[in-house]
Amino acid sequence: MYVMKTINLGVMGVLLSLPTTPSFASDSVVLDEIGHDSVAHEVEHATSSGLPQFDPTWFASQVFWLLVSFLLLYVIFAKKTLPNLSSTIDRRRKQIESDVETTQKLTKEAEAIYEAYEENLKDAQLKARAVVINMENDLKAQADADHKKFRDKAEETILKTEISIEAAKVTALKDIQAIASEIASETVKKLIGHKIDSKNVESIVSSLVKTPETKKKPSKKAA
Amino acid sequence: MSNPIHQFEITPYIPLHIGGLDVSFTNSSLWMMIGVFLSVSVLSLASKKRALVPGRLQMFAETLYEFIANAIRDNIGSEGRRYFPLVFTLFVVVMLGNSLGLIPYSFTYTSHLIVTLALALIIFITVLVIGIARHGFHFFSLFLPPGLPVWLIPLILPIEILSFIVRPITLSVRLFANMIAGHIMLKVFAGFSVGMVAAMGGWGYLAAIFPMFFNTVLIGFELLIAFLQAYVFTVLSCIYLKDTIHIDH
Image (cartoon, rainbow over the protein chains, first blue to last red):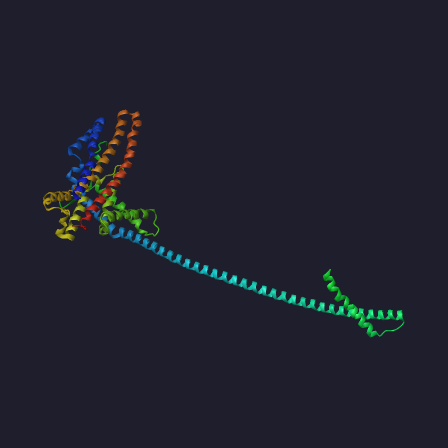
């Protein structure tokens, strides 16, 4: 594992450092093309000391100032900048977490309120229905009662009227009998010149009145 | 002017000697300090506000923070948090060295092998010191892969030791070679343009457009390389730093 990694790194290093060689080659071409005196002088200067990177004159200075800037940055970052940033990020994360928690709590509350509302609504609907049904029943009972009362009254009136009609009929019949017997006795008197006892006439008349009725009924049936 | 090597030359500005060492303030030091000033001012400004809803600058700083944090989490693990300032600083130094160097007339301090070697050695020495301090002699079992047959030890041990020692060299040479190659290429193509004008006069100005166009493309490419190499340097450092934490055998 480690060997592999190192070989990879080594290959990478070689590959990445490759472009330097063609660049060096091309730069000499450019310089040949230009061929100015000052450039030639510079080339001489550069080639005499090689790459400035490998001139040890400034190694100490480079390392010194790098360490100074690195330490400066390290101290400032470690003591100030990074704690500031991390505390800000932490604070935001906590804020978001608490906000999410509050949201969840409020959502739950809202759901509970909605459920209670639904229940109340259902109760109210049931109550309303009961009230309507009661009212309907009451009204029906009332109507029935009124209806019955009216019918009773009407029936009573009808009965009374029938009774009075019956009574009138009886009186009328009696009157008719009386008149008939009178007429009969008068007729008999005129015919035979003799007055008959009124009581006898009456009985005869009444028997005559009654017989046709009794006789008529079976005759009707026969017909 | 057209010498592509000239851009790597160091010019001392303020002579300075400490203990017999020449540590003069040079153009290289200047651009290191510009990098320090730039990164500290931008990141301080960005992290000062601590806004819950970040602005552009703060968003940039937080993205950078998360970027490095992710690189550490992926390559070292959660225990790698203790190296966060180190890795962050490393990335900023390399990234700024690479990208500031693309400004015309500037100096690319990451194109000097001694600088990249010093950066790689910071990591190498950190790994060695912290590794030995934490694991003692057991740290050297790093050179013996688990499940290795005894008769292979004489073969594998030297290879593993060599691969360990060669790490700072590959790390530094990769960055150095990429930077120097890119910058020479840019300078060579710019030199073509100048050379065409010098050789052909009036028509040369027309012909000079082509290398210039190519250079424009190259600048974009070099920006990518600048970022990529800074990232590669950071990630490899993370992988090396991992050895101080996990020795799985």
